[in-house]
Image (cartoon, rainbow, N blue to C red; front, side, top):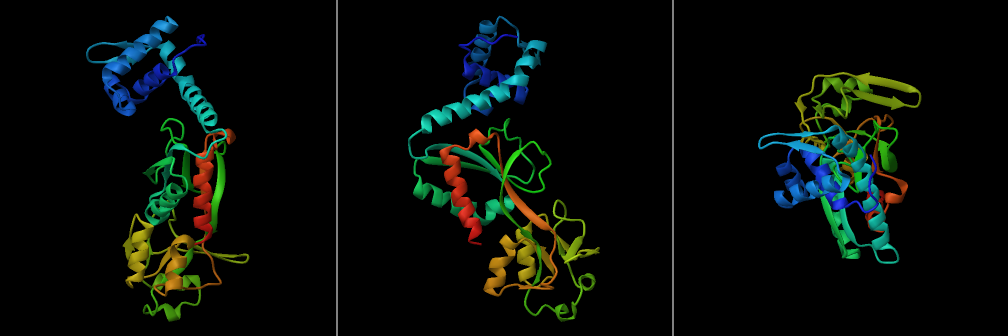
Length: 298
């Protein structure tokens, strides 16, 4: 299929949205425009190409073979066009424009609000939109400028930059009954345990130099949230394992103490994932610099 040089990218975006959402109404909602606008853009695109891209009736629609061929290339085409436009509009100017970023719930609840405020204070021409999710989003199809993820990263083809790494720590409230008898990782199974299920772990693994110990247990409390586990530990409900970004401030404040400090848990890393090296726009670089500085200070 040959694409004309003067192909209307807004029409391609409308077509892509219809395909992704499975309906013209859904495509319109995705773009925030009337359904009639989406329908017209798709008709105009079909007329420009001289091809039928979508077969539609009053109740159903079906993407044609030609439409599927275009859809398979549209995502990359639009991403490259967006990158080019951002580079052109930001050249030689202070960072400006809109950023759409996905981040894990933990990071979102812990510090993104403060980082966003700092970014806006320094760069008032940048607007920010965040989506907090622990499921890996689709960077391109969901139109994110960047995705912040805890590792390991499943897709080795992703372009990623490590923001932070460190081992998880065994912690408890000061004076928790029984903690004075913990001399080895195997001893922790005798105390109430506050657990956060996968993706963090099925059991706790401890490391000391070349020695590794895996401790299996029946948790006293299971949470889907590291923040809830932290709060329960502070309240004296049991032991838990927390990443340094969450444990360090509480240890410093005296609300938690670290147990078995000579042993460390698995290392957890945080990455920012983006589409291509040239997709790091001045506004994204400005935000990531502020985020990185904030993380280093914790």
